[in-house]
Image (cartoon, rainbow, N blue to C red; front, side):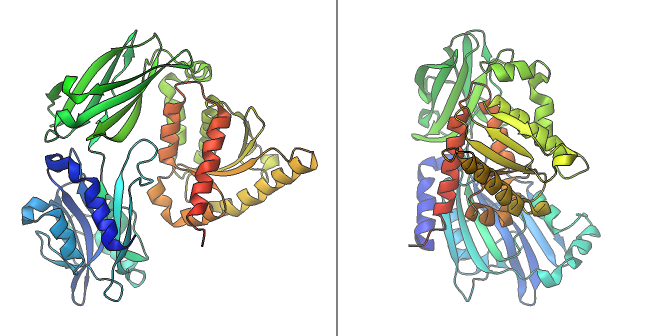
Length: 459
């Protein structure tokens, strides 16, 4: 669809939110040019129950940044975006320019943005302007910001503070982001044979439009499906200003509940609720006997670049895959096998995942080409041993968020590599609550690779 259709689709997706939107806000970073301040990167935020980023502004020499509510300049979100597409963005700190590419703007709408998946529906409209002219300004801008009256380590740290995303060096961009207006409260528990299910949303939202659907697993089997209307939930507004609705259901002992939060009939968030003292997955139960609440595992999976951290990540991924039903061998920890992949995991049916792990970008240490080469070696050995029917899936795992590796994603997807990021790892930890079929997980990975490749097909 063209940009106008994308804009219409985005606003149509939040039309039923009504007063639940309450305070749409705009966060931005802009640079001074010969003709005034020019936008570098920005986000227009809808659905945040608490401020998305610190409200306020920053200005020092050639850099201006801020976060404000649109009510401060008395304009609707639709009119604000329409003005931006005419090249002008109004802010309490003064107008800034949003230049197009030869006067034109591009963009697209993603109703299920990867930053939210697999647990949250986040719709993102991306509007692209002209080329970002940053190369000739760096690293000078970073060093200017180190000496600002409110110092920042560099431009990226300032962008992180105002949550406008990872710096793009290619194009000026505005992202209109529809955050989930409702979410499952993940602090609830199964206690004995009772499960509390709760949702959190803006106090401006209508409880009658809220709802929960759920599935109950007990003894490794699905034992119940159910629906709870917001009209029968107990509602309070907490000291944090968030409206909370809750209900209780009866479940088998040691049950695990998967709950889905909806508003106006659309599901925006899912979460798992369990008894922390029990686990249906015997592999997790045995592992957790030595790693209380999976604290060490969660720490290993979140490791960032640093001495020894890549090895910890490899171990964490191996433990996680084992709890998901895979058989795993860790080859990368052995000095004599440094030409081998970090991990090889197999399913009960014998299919292979060849895995490389990194705490940094996907291209670190030539990881992608080596992964493809090593996957082909495994595939050729299987064929030579009369096991051609067994599948081989190349997988790269990073502890970085998907937004932090945006520049590496296309190459990996075009190579047919399954990309696992920090968000995927966090979601996978929740999936270990119940016994998993590794072949089913493998099939999901294959489908994700096929869907990614389909984006680059030409007709």
